[in-house]
Image (tube, one colour):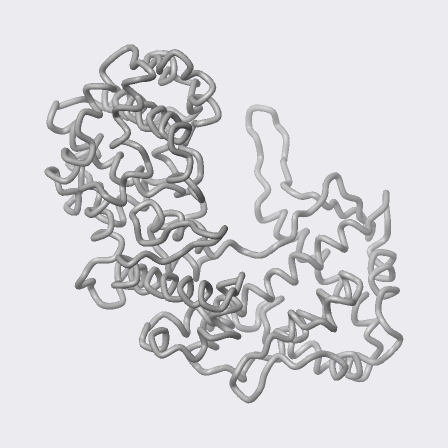
Length: 461
C-alpha cells in the first residue's frame, strides 16, 4: 500500500470523482473572497456539495448515457430520492443529512488536494492553493454559489444547471485546471507530480492496449502481456516500479486468500495443529521439493511468466492453489531486473521479514526434503502467530469503558483458536480503478462496450 501511494499520489480508493477536487478548491476560494470563518465555510461546502450532487443526479436521469461508467455523486443515495419537487438545499445539507461527516465529503480528498496544490494554508485557515486558478474555478462553477445560497432549487433549474454536473468536467475550465494539476506538462522530475503523471500516462497506454487486445486485467497486461514489450511503455520511468508492485500484489493476494481459507476451516474451538492438519489434508503426499517442481514456472530467465494464472492451478482446491501461487511468486525473488526487484521485494530493511518473497523462498529451501503437509502445518502456526501479533499491535484501551479492545476475527487461547467472523481475502487496491474514474471525469477516457476507451485527448498525452 505504501508503494502504491508513492507511485500514485493524489489518488486513493475513495477519491471517485474528478470534479470534487476542483469543487472544494472553488469553495475555499469563495470563502476567502467573502472572508468567511470556519463555521460558515463548512456550511458553504456542504451546500455546494448538495447542489453538485443534486444537479448530477438530475442530469443522470435526463441523459444517463453520458454517465455510463461513472460512480454516483457523493451522497446520491440520500439526495436522489428527494428531488421529485426539486432540491431543498437547507434540509439536504443539514448536519447528518446527505453526509454524516461535518465537512461533507471533503475528508477523502483533503490530503490529495493539498498535495496537488489545489488547497493551501494561510495562517490557520485553509484556502485555495497555488494551482487553483480562480478564473478557471469561477468559469467552471458559474452560478454554483447563487444556487447554494437558496433554500430551494426547482427540478427544472437543476436540469438547466447541468454545466455543474460531475460529467461536465471534461469540457469545463475547472476540468482543464485539474488535468494540468494531475498531469503537468513539465513536472518536477521524480517528485509526486512526476510519478503521478507517469503513472496516469502508463494507465492510458495500458487501457489503449487492452482495447486493442481484448485484455481484461491491466495488471496482467503490464507484467505478462503486450505491455511488457510496448515501446511507449518502456519509455515511462515508473513502469519497472509498477511491475514489481503488481507482482508483489499477486503474492499479497495469495497470502490473504490462504489466510481467508484457513479461517473458514476453523469450526468452534480448534487447536492450531488441527487447523494445520485440515490444510495439510488438501495437499498431496509428496515432499515440498516435489510439490514445487510440479508447479508451472513463474520465470523465464529474468522475464516473469503467468504461472499463477495457469489452467493447472485453476483445477486445484482453493487452498492448494493459493499455496502454489505463493511458491511461484517466491521463486521470482532475486531473479528479476534490479529496478523491478526493489519494488517486488520492498525496502531493504524489510527484505527478510515474515511473508516477504525472499523469506518464503528461504523457508522453501529449508523444508525442501520434508513432506509438504508438514510444511503446511508449520506455516499455519506462523500465520496464526503473526495474526495474533498484528492484532495486539493494533489493540487499544478505552479509558471510558475500561475495555481493552483487540481488533481481530481470530482469537488465540493456549494453543486453540476460534473465530467470530470471516476474513475477506483479496489483494491490495492499486488505485488504478479510481485513477481511470478520475480520468473519465476529465475526458481522457470514456466508457464503451463495457470498458474504458482512451479518447483522442488522452491518447495525445
